[in-house]
Amino acid sequence: MSNLSIIAVIACGVIEAEVRHFTAGCTHIREMVFLPQGLHDDAVRMQRELQAAINQAEANPAVEAVVLVYGLCSRGVENLRHARCPLVIARAHDCVTLFLGDKDRFAAYSREKPGTYWFNPGWIRGRASPGPDREAHLRREYAEKFGEDDVEYLLEMDRASLAHYQRATYVGLGLGDPAQEAEHTRSCAACLGWGFDQIPGDPSLLKALLHCDWDEKRFLIVPPRHVIRLTADDSIIRAEPEPPLA
Image 1 (cartoon, rainbow, N blue to C red):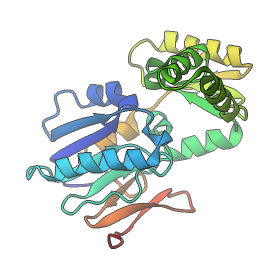
Image 2 (cartoon, rainbow, N blue to C red):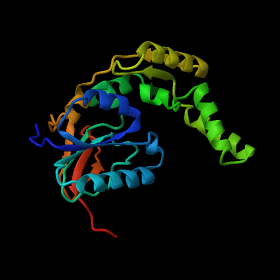
Image 3 (tube, rainbow, N blue to C red):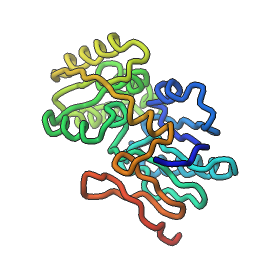
Image 4 (cartoon, rainbow, N blue to C red):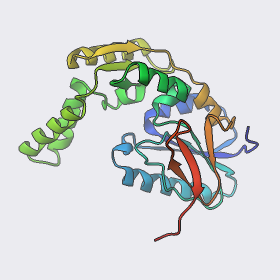
């Protein structure tokens, strides 16, 4: 367990409602920043925006540690530099583990049911999950930037990226309207010809992260002047001394 108490929280917008709920009334959080969801699709941009948020947090002398409410997220958390405050992050490949409460639970489900696409409340709100809403949303977004042929090509690429999935699984932490969100997931699965599943979420990992209950099994505490690196084992991430700037 960490004895650090004054923290800055940097979180993905996909989990904003849950973070705000579980930190309501907290006095140990000095700053809270939410970055746009979907940054894992562009790891370079993700690193750039996370780095700016970390720099801002470290500039506040009251902040003792910076909490990242992220997983490895397409390796977008690697190479982040910090000179004064340790970074704290859950051992997780992505935000799904923060909803499930345990990286081992995520691994077991993935082994048992490969080809699962996870739905959670934030992805549903952002219309980023597969289904008719996603395609309509992407079509509007692409149409503002590209010609008709390019729009159709990009939509086809998106469809191809989903081809290996077989199941839509909903997990949430009980906020909002879980029944409606689960039904939305079921309808998207039916539209895509996938199976459907719903499993209960577990807020324990997220709550521990936000309330400084940091054990080594569940969390990585990255010392100053160290960076996050992917591992080849079930610890998922490790800390290494930061390399010299090029």
